[in-house]
Length: 513
Image (cartoon, rainbow, N blue to C red):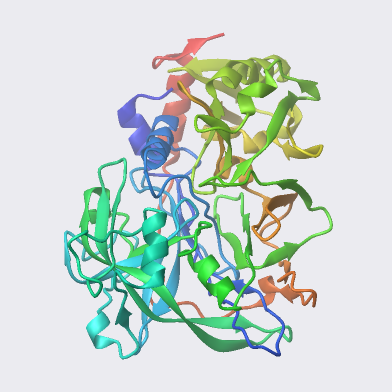
């Protein structure tokens, strides 16, 4: 593995993805069938050429979070021209824009399936960043200047529900008219606090005739007046966090209770360096989709993983290792860059991969990471991995879904296993590395998850599962993007890449098998 100073230089030189696409969501009417809603996402997450230590560090920070937790996240409904960022110290994230208040203001918010609350920066705010390395203009919300805004009090039923899930705070000495507050503290030392408000969210309804209509709904969201830790840093600053979880105060649940959208959302993450993809409030419809049950009563999106096979050979792993409990389980998380195997499953997995590669592949071990040097294509040189879930449902994992390209020069490419050991824990996390180039459907109404291999640069058909089976070819929409679009540019010095490969093969702290 490369020395730290070289890793930073190369990582800072490799182009990555950032996508801005328009978004739409469904509006409800008693006589009109539910229509799919969609959110446009931007992506800023370096993959190729970024040191595994850096990717692990970012995932570790995320997994320590008490609320941000294990997220899903993701890509955009309509593809726009993509530019990339090679900054290895900018945390990879997906974000969309929402319009709130009257007059409406637009806010960029991080998509987070590991939490439930939508919150945005409010004015005044202590510790909140005023600029962003994502090249977006940061905004702040002011309830006093919105004619449709009202503050949620401690006597409000919605506050009572949030108190039960730990997403609200009311002091025992507070009167019933006191503001319903919240305090979220994250394991990386960052945090936010504020109070809840109710106001109008604006979105576009995607119609079956390939038209969009302006729609709106009144929702509850957080008004942040204090931020700390990493939330104060400008390099990855956004206007807030959009919780995509399952609890009552999530926007998905609120819009569903209003009859605006179904309790199902879908994403498809592009696996190319440009990133991007699709996220819709609705169910992507594809003939190859297979479904497996979600584990009920879990804070994250847990699945019943039963076994793992490499080239069709089942690994010698006790299936009880994958049983869901407070300390075990398998989580699908589009907010995690890599993938993390339960401690007891990691060694059998790596051993099986290393033993099944083509004889022409050279194995290298650096700082505990199993890597390979080859001039051949990964599909012809590496085995296929299969994950088996409850109901006999399989997920095929191609080499590109468990390997990361770390460097290349001429015809030689260095690949390292991107699946990491979840040290001391028996939790398996399937992150972006596994999820890319697949449709994923989170069907909360039927407590199941579906997937299918797919070219995520292609259009998709979407239904709300409302019984009307209206389909929308979301990829054909080309709605103008925000004027606050992010822009990224970088160059790739070939000399640095050549130097790194030389150090990896001929020295530089690399051990050989």
